[in-house]
Image (cartoon, rainbow, N blue to C red; front, side, top):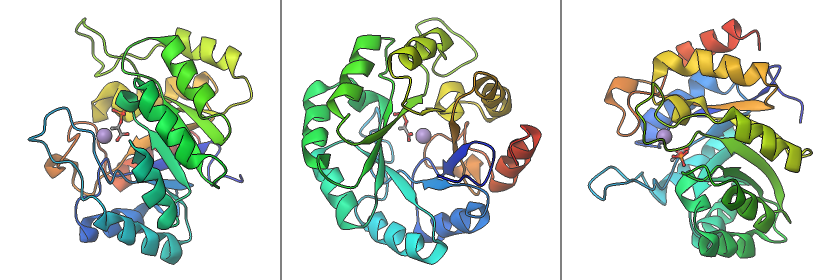
Length: 244
Ligand code: PEP
Ligand code: MN
C-alpha cells in the first residue's frame, strides 16, 4: 500500500458516537491518514459505560467510505460482527485485547473470515502472555493480517495505562518477521500528553505504523477521554515525528 505519510497511519475516534460528530472528524483527517478507525461496538469493562453506536453506525461508515474514498477499520468481537462488517463493505477489522484472550471467539472469527476479502489486525492480549497472542495470530493466518501492540495490564502503577513491552514486540517480530506491526500509543498511554513520545519510541523501533485515537472534542468524548487527541493535534504530531 502506498501510504500518505512515511508510515501507515490509522486514526479516528475510539467510538463512533453520533453521525454528525463522526463525519466532522472524518472530514478533518481523511487527507492525512491512510485508514480511519471507528469503534462501532465497544467491549466496555462496565455494562454501565457507553458501548458504541452499534449497527446503525455501519451504514454511516459505508457511506463515508464511498464519499471520502478511504478505507475504514472497525473492531470485531464475534463472528456476527465479521458478517456485518462484510455486509457493509468494511474490509479491515481489528481484534481487541480482551477478545485476543479468548481462543473460542478467535476461532469463531477465523471461521467467519476464512476465504473472505477481509484484513484482520490482532491486538496483543491484556496480559503479557506471548503464547496467547501467537495463538490468535496463528488462528487468523489464512487472512491478511497485521499485529498491534497496545500495551499490557500492569499491576504496578506506572505512567502508562497499559505498559508497553518492547521486549515482547521484539520476540513477536522475530516469530512473525513478515507480518507488519502497528503501535497503538493511545491505549498504551491512556494519556494524550504521552502520545507523541510513545509514537516516537515506536518509530525508532521501526514499527510499520501507528493507530491513534482522534476526537473532535476529546474532553467530552463518551469513551477514553484522557487519551483522544484533536484532528489538529494529530496533524501536528505527524509533522513533529517527521512522518509528513
Ligand atoms: C480500541 O481500539 O478501541 C480498543 C478497545 O482497544 P483495546 O482492545 O486495545 O483496549
Ligand atoms: Mn479506545
